[in-house]
Image (cartoon, rainbow, N blue to C red; front, side, top):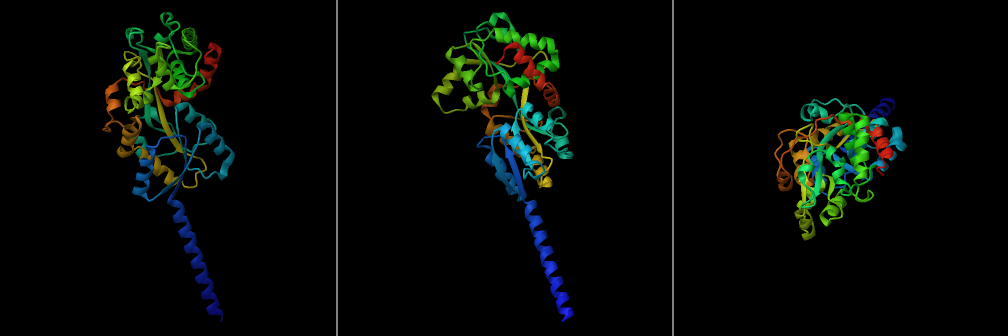
Amino acid sequence: MKPLFSRSLCSLALAVACLANADANAEEKVLNLYSARHYQTDEALYESFTKQTGIKIKRIEGKDDELVERIRNEGAYSPADVLLTVDAARLSAAHELGLFAAVSSPILEARIPVNLRTSDWFSFSTRARVIVYGKGAVNPEHLKTYDDLANPRLKGKICSRSGSHPYNLSLMASIIAHQGEVRAEQWAKGVVANFARAPKGGDTDQIRAVAAGECAVAVSNTYYLARLMRSDKAEDRQTMDKIGVVWPDQQGVGAHINVSGGGVLKHAPHREAAIKFLEYLASDQAQRYFADGNNEWPVVVGVKIDNPALEALGKFKADSLPVASLAMYRAKAQIIFDRAGYR
């Protein structure tokens, strides 16, 4: 009976090993994605990735702060492999909390410009922050730079969203990086002095306020403008007919750009799949999805897009400031806005 018993044990051990390998292989075909991107067009991104790799994406969506806090609370037991979100300030906050893991990828390093990546998170699309003005309400020649927004000639003419919003914090961080804290605070106080009303609403609300004549000037991310330009609603087209757009600082450092990006999380259970996913987001196909589907510019140079709204906005000089610099001055930006009364 001994040989039979031994053979039975061997067969059992082999079966267990096979099951373990099967489980491991199954795990390799899954990616747990925590995403603060709430765009329906991203569905095509995920479906294409799964089709190409066989890796199924399990997605949890939420607000940026909620997802970051969830990852922190889950700690080493977090099932999350990748965090995707918008705005450099939010990505830097996750970095500062130590949530991301360093990634070395020749593909990412070759395709994503050095100023749009760090050692542990990467930009995959950009939006520019431009000046919007009411046609006939102000001379666009007086709006060539962000500095012009602080000029007393615009007193009572500026609408803005909150100074605590990440989009404005990133813009302020870029001003600090280029001009220093003293001049940045002077600028913030000048802008506050020019407010037509207390900050409220989002970028689209500022665009509509300018079109309605509630104010004459505002700042907006291009993503919102392109969305209105592509809208089928008559009121959206009427809004765009009443406003003009200025690309700031074209004779200087260039227009401030913000990013959408992500990174592999420190405790990612499917690290290999996570890196493959980030590399896929840098592919020509995915880059076109960002542009054509969601009105964002690709970060990869030379990718051909087909978005009439982005084409209508035209070519522009973008600020090449490293995204790491935006992270460096994020906290200081909030302090300066608070001191200036930019609520």
